[in-house]
Structures are given as C-alpha cells and as structure tokens.
Length: 230
Image 1 (cartoon, one colour):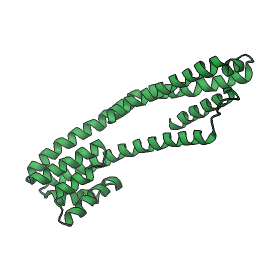
Image 2 (cartoon, one colour; image 1 turned 135 degrees about the vertical axis):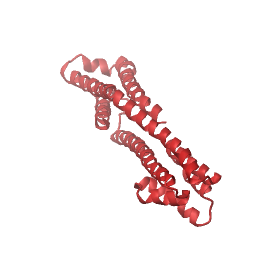
Image 3 (cartoon, one colour; image 1 turned 90 degrees about the vertical axis):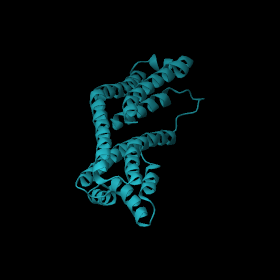
Image 4 (cartoon, one colour; image 1 turned 180 degrees about the horizontal axis):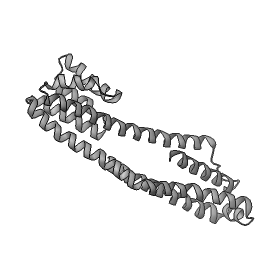
C-alpha cells in the first residue's frame, strides 16, 4: 500500500511538473524525495508503535503468569524479560537495572513509561502501581489480568478495524494512482488537455482541487485506523 501511495505521489508530481507554467516555480526532485521520505518515516514509526504494544502485551501476559505462580513482581518481571522481544526487553530491562541500583521499582517503571506509546505506557503504569502498592502476588495477578484483558481487546479491535477497512483504503489509494496516470495520458494524447491544464484554470483550480481531494481521501481513510490505535 505504501508503494501504491508513493507511486500516486510520483505521478501527481509528474503531472504538476508537466502542466506548470514556465514562469512558475517547478517542483524539484529534492522536494519530492523529501516528501516521500517523510511519508516513509511516518509509516515506519506507526508500524514500530504497533509492534511495541503487541510485544509489551506478550511481556505483560508472561508477568501475569509468573505472578499467578506465586513469584513476587521483580522476579516475575525478570522471568518475562528473558522471553520478551527486543522492544519490551529494552524497556523492562532498563527499569530492572534501575531497581538494582536502589531506585524504587515503581519510579523506574514510570520513568520508562514517560516516552512510550499509550498502550505501552498503560502497561508500565499498571506495573508501577503494583510495585508501589506492594500487593501480594495473587492480588497483583488479578489486577494485571484485567489490564491484559483490556490491552488484548484493543489489539483485537485494531486488527478487526484494519481488516474491515483494508479494501476501502486500497480502493482509495488505487484511485489516487489512476487519476494522475489518466491525466498524464490525456496530456500526451489529447491536444486540448495540455493547454487547459497549463492555463490559469488548470494550474489554479483543476490540478490543486484534484490533488487536494485525493490527499483528503487518503488521509481520511488512514485516520480511521489511527483513531482506533490512538
């Protein structure tokens, strides 16, 4: 999907460059590359946040299982870290290292949650609450189990929304690719289209409106999924 979106942006830039009047400022390749790099960076960051929340949920469930077996919270966290993925392991290991240096475990966990994703922060705050209250393993397991259930429900909800809206988002991106491609084809094959697009009507109304509508459609389709993940 990212490739299709990038292709749509590239084709749109081609049409704008071909139709722009000579006296205007042309769209430079550097600006296009920078724009595509920002899109790619934003996509990678969203994927990383989603993966981090899933990894933290796995670590939280492992901690919950260790608490149910009767281990205290610090040992339960150490057991969870041993089998955790890299992202969750880094966060929890940092908090445990601070705890080994005589920093209270709840303060170490809250410090780790400061710059984390919302769901990751929720998991770490729950662990910090358990550490601050010094609950027994059975009571801590009950509290942590409810947090795990909530995070698991949110993950399932995000997956279901992504599956239900995947076709719609793919169609929107496909249209965003087809419209500039058809416009470029018409510019090259139909004599009257080129002068229309290079006129004031084309450069100030038609092309900006087309680009605006396509961008709004793509952003709105992605906002549906982002609103659920937030």
